[in-house]
Length: 290
Image (tube, rainbow, N blue to C red; front, side, top):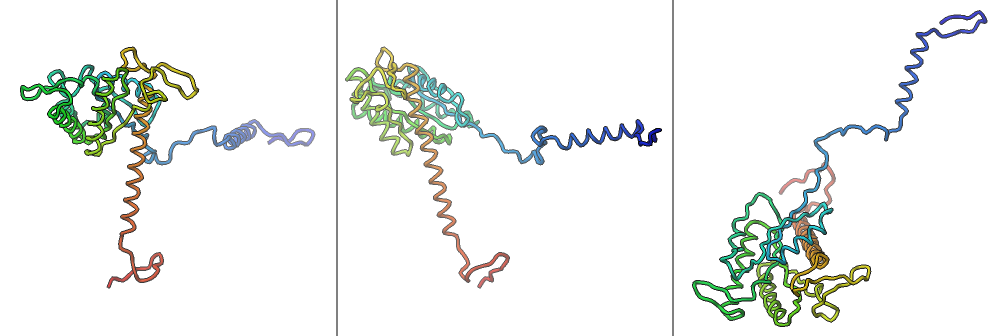
């Protein structure tokens, strides 16, 4: 430092530089913590992102529509996504055109999808052939063979360790067609129950307030929207989203039920574990075996 003629002490240039650097360091240390994102202390312990469960939709043209509805409904969902495995004009009666049981048996186990949703039957109200013999729709032999095919399809899917859900047919416009659809639903529901597979009934969400066929439905805002296509069998996109909402709601409910059941079983197993009977055991105290 230098002393001026007035007697005041003045810092030299070198001292000024040191003071300036110390001031800058002090400002950096006083910066808000949020201004710099620190690196994780242990990157190996970072939480893994939840892997979305893939839903594969199997079925006929109704299955095609359900896939589209689920796709619209789940496109921003982090827990589920959906792929199309449906085949237009297919079913369980005409196996020469497409055999669903064979298709299920050839599904690979590469985790392509974990949940199988089956939605078919619109093309199955017709005779079927087995062993060179034709059987009339709803006859005893037709019913036996068709039920056996439902069973084989479900078992083939379950063998691949897939969660299986069977969607029943909707209300149909023509009375005769609707009665036949209800007959098929009875077979689907009974077989699904026997094989412990959830059956998803959609008749109530595809019917009007009187329980009969309806072309429109009322959305959550009370606005009437077109639900059915002109053929009285298929749906508009809005209608398929209605069905998709019912399907995904039941999938979520079944999964939540399974979680609660697992938690109950774990709790019961913990309660059944043998405990020391020599009074209260303090931490660090050893219980001598007898």
